[in-house]
Every structure is written in structure tokens, then in C-alpha cells.
Length: 398
Image (cartoon, rainbow, N blue to C red; front, side, top):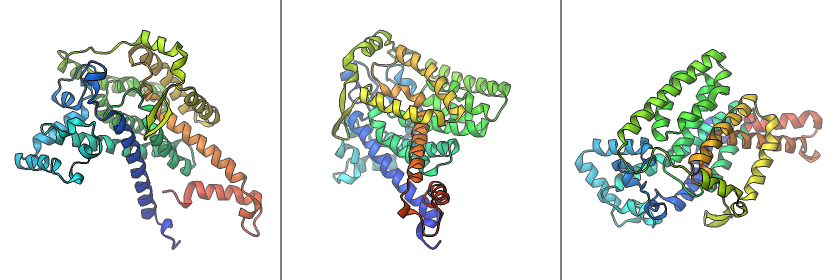
């Protein structure tokens, strides 16, 4: 008990450090590929760059994702002019540590624009913080879904590592907050925290309007706390809140270019039936890797689901089924072909699936411990489960 790792504060410090490093690597992998979409006018003949988003001139439906731009604009307006000017001057100082985005990401050209630099850095910080907090929220969800705390700790790390691979064809500053809000919504649903759910719903919908549909997938988790009637009542309230936010934001930007949604049904069907769609590769972390719908990715996901499906709680299985029924039609009709990130309603369930798969592997590993690993004088059949329980639930994981 005198060892440092026996102390909760030290264990949490290690956990926070490891999650911070992993979130940093993951966010850098995303930002290296996409920045804050300075390339949008060139690639897609539309404008959803950060200056357009914070000015409210971006095209629909991108302009609807206003949570972080609204916060950044509010912070900049609240700062005294002298403080604002000093912060901008620091960001353009010749010392490289004062302007890391402009220094390390040459394609992030909007970070060098004095009119937007401060807000660019604010949104960069909020987007990264959302990813870091999402890892902790996902860990909390995983702990609720199964008893192995080691697996619950490792699953968000694994998901963060592959996140840049999921952000294929596109990636935006509102993607990490979307993951955070979905994880928190599941966690609150499992605990029956209705008032907190209402607040999260308003913020999440302001971040991305599709959260309206994610509410439908919360039914199985709410049902663990409430009757069917009460669960449906809670969902109706959440849908009303999300719908009201959607209406307000759509009315505000009704005169922007673009449309309420973008239609890609035919392109998606062509993409899905073409064999080349399943052998694509792209660079992630500076290394060529499988892209999106690559057959290798499909096989890996299928293996994870097959391993974990029977071990998932019924509520998780129901959540994934509802998410598929909701997300797949939306993806086919409105999402750009091959844009894997738009299966985001499945992300929380996918992390739980990873967690349960890791737990199953660890359980088999513990049971296969060699005789040399069994303490002298202990019966192997009684010791291995104890070792597994100790390692997975208490010893080194907060």
C-alpha cells in the first residue's frame, strides 16, 4: 500500500497524462489532414472555412454548426481591446512557440489572418478539449456497460487512435464535440439525469443539427431507468428542445447559400457498388493506411462485432440496432460518398464494442496464465480469477 500507484491521485494523474498524449496524437492526425477546412472552396466549390463559420456567412448546412463559433465570438467580444490586441500580437510573434498552428501546420492559412487568428486558436483549443473530455466520458460509459476497468480504460485510447481514419473524405472542428455530447448523453440516459439531458441536447444540437436523430437511439438506455411511457415522454421533450434549436438556427441562416441538406443518394449508390471503393488507401499519421470502406476495415469491424455481440448488454445491442436504422438512411441520402465520419451515431456503441472485445481477450489471457505466474502455495484454478479481478478492477486503473 506504500507504492505510489496504490494512491488514487497518482493513478488519476497517470490516466490524465496518457489520455492527454493520446488525444494530442489523434487530434494532430485529424488536423494534419483537414485543418479547419481551408480547402473547402477549392475541393467542393462551397465555403465552410473557419472565417466563414465565425462570420456566419458559410453555406448551409455547414453554417448551422454554430456552438464553437458562437463561444469564440463571445469570448473575443468580451475581451478588452487591449487584451485582444496583445493576444493577436503574441500569435504573430516570431517565436515559434507563440503560434504553433501557423508554425507546424503550413496549410492552416486562416490561423495567420490577424482578423481571425484569436478565434482560430480558441476553436482549436475547444475542439481538442472536446476530444480529450470525450475519452473520459467514453470510459465512464464503458465502466457502466461491463465490469472490466482495464478494458474500459483502453477502449477510448483505441478509438482515439483510429479516429483520423474515420475522418476520411472530411473532418471538421465540430466532430470532437459531437462525440463528447453523444457519450455524455448516453451516460446521463443510463443514470436517468433528465434535466442534464435537456441541457446537453440544446448544446449538442447547436453544435450539429443531426443530434435530433441521435435522441431516438437513447431509448434503450432511458428504458433501464424509466417505464416505457416515461421514456417516451422524456424523448418527446428532448426532441422538442432539439427541434426548437434547429428551427431557430435554420431561420437565422435561411438566406445563406447552399441548402438545408445536401443530397448524395445516387453518388452513394454508385460508390457502394463500385469495387474500387473497397480497396482505397490514404495517409494517416504520415503513413499510408486503409481508407474508409476498405475491405480490411470491414473485416476488422465484423470481427469485433462478432466477438462482442453476445456479451453486450441488451440495451447496447438495441441502441446499435436503432442507430443503424436511423443512421444508414441518413448517410445514403445526405452524406458525401465514403465519408465514414457520418456514421457518428454508431461511435459510442462502437467504443463499447471495442471495450467488450478487449475485456473478452483479457479474460482469456488471465485464464491462460502459465503455472509460473501462480503464487507459490496457491491453487491455479482459484488464483487466476482472483488475479483477473484484481488487475481488471482495482490494481492499477482509477
